[in-house]
Amino acid sequence: MNLNWSAMKKTYYILLLIAISSCDNEDANDCFQTSGSIITKEIRVNDFSKIEVNEGINLVLKEGLSQEILIETGANLINEVEATVIGDKLFLYDHNNCNYVRDYGITTIYVTSPNITEIRSKTQYEVRSDGILTFQNLALISENFTIDNAASGNFRLQMQNQELSIEFNNLSNLFISGSTDRFNINFPGGNSRVEAEDFTANVVNIFSRGSNDIIINPQLELSGDIYGTGDVIAVNRPVLVTLTAHYIGSLLFQD
Image 1 (cartoon, rainbow, N blue to C red):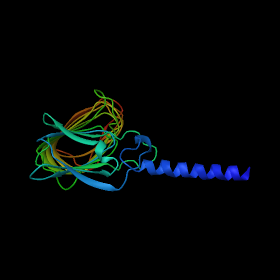
Image 2 (image 1 turned 60 degrees about the horizontal axis):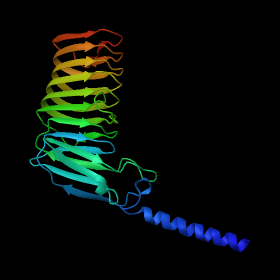
Image 3 (image 1 turned 90 degrees about the vertical axis):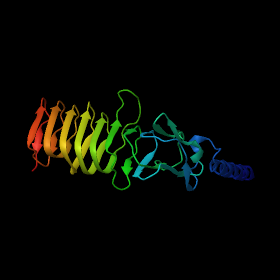
Image 4 (image 1 turned 120 degrees about the vertical axis):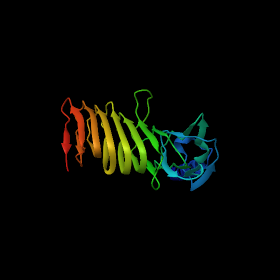
């Protein structure tokens, strides 16, 4: 009896070792596949001016003279990470969806470009800048009214440009520094937050039905409407103020 039990244990450990070993390669089942060592791969695509980053990806954006895309992830996962251009938009996907054994958030895509006009985030991870971005007119979008997705990742940016527009309706937050001529904020709903006390803007226009605060640094003009419960907090009092509070949320000055 003891011999049979010992043999069974030995067989069990051998089978377990085989199962674990089989997970450490790119052909293993997604759910049990290990990431492997972290590697970087350069991808060449057609020119683009917009970016859509999908679930499971960290995006690092850098301004440069020419376009470059670098994918950083596990060696066993990299064949399922995709960067493709349709029209003028770069789509970023990580198809390694099922995960029982790997760490989360290990896929980062580094994008260098001379000009980007729109970033649509459908990821739960961050979109951040590497250095100061001077893309003159940039729109940041994180919403799930039109498309069902994660749309909860934060933006952390340094910018100096002419116009920045953001549209959030879920859980994404914006942390930003630098300056712009015009800052447009559209929160149709959700609990998104803006921390832009170090981001000077000559003109700020706000439409908010959100439940979180919007912290801004307007210099000349502040306009718009507050229909939600979140406050608008201005760290400077501009010359012209036509922002109207219609509900619980209010305009507060911290100058």
